Structure formats: C-alpha cells, structure tokens
Length: 145
Image (cartoon, rainbow, N blue to C red; front, side, top):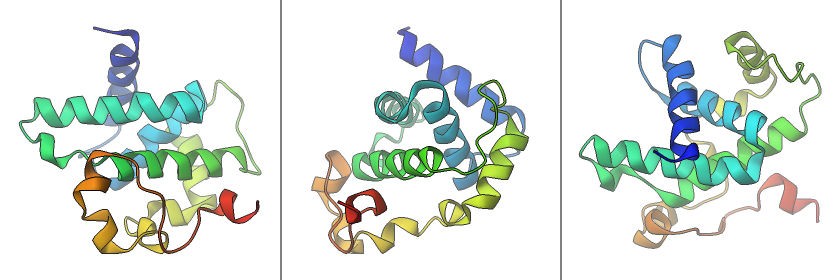
C-alpha cells in the first residue's frame, strides 16, 4: 500500500467513525480533512485516487467521476483557504468540521456543481474520465482574476 492509500484509508476511517452512512456530508468532511492536512493540490490527487480505488473495490468503477471529484476538492479548498474562523492545526475533528459547514452551507448542497456546470457537461464521458472546466460560471477564485 502506498503512503497516499494509507492516508486516504486513515481519513476514511476517521469520517466513518462518526457516521451511520457515507453520504454527501461525509464526502465533504473527508475532503475538508484532506485539504487541511495535505493542502488542496495534494488533496486533489489523494481524494481522487482514494475514491476511484474505493469504487473499484466496491465493484462499481463507473461511479467514479474525475471532474466532480476534482471540482469538489477545489471548492472545499477555496472555502478552507478563505475561512474566517480557522481552528488550530490540531483541531480537525468533527466539531471543527461542523462549525466550518455551518459557515459554508453551500458546500452541503449536492447540487452545488450545477451552478458552474451544465448537467449535460457533467453527464459527458469527457467529464467522467477527465477534467472539464466549468461551462456555466467560473469558480469563485477564477471570477476574481
């Protein structure tokens, strides 16, 4: 097992320890943990590879979606970077995440990506297997440039 596989498994175990299921909120929590511990750039590859590996292991590799995975890491990373009430480095538990989620409720909306992408774009093979730029509106950090 690679260090990134170990890191992803550790993050996943932490998220699942306080959850009845692995839904959207848990995906965002996992991503928030990865961004806080490894930075957005590294979290992108760590989370994407981990989710892809998990989907393969579950016998559903077609459920992995490259554009969605990367877009969510970028969105969470942007919000972490601009969070006004960042907890201490060591405070990355569920209560710190809950406070972050309360300050950034849009991240808990599963349909958030539809603000940036047409549904046909997200449904495309190109988006499923590779990175596709937003085609409705730029991400917030791109709109500022």
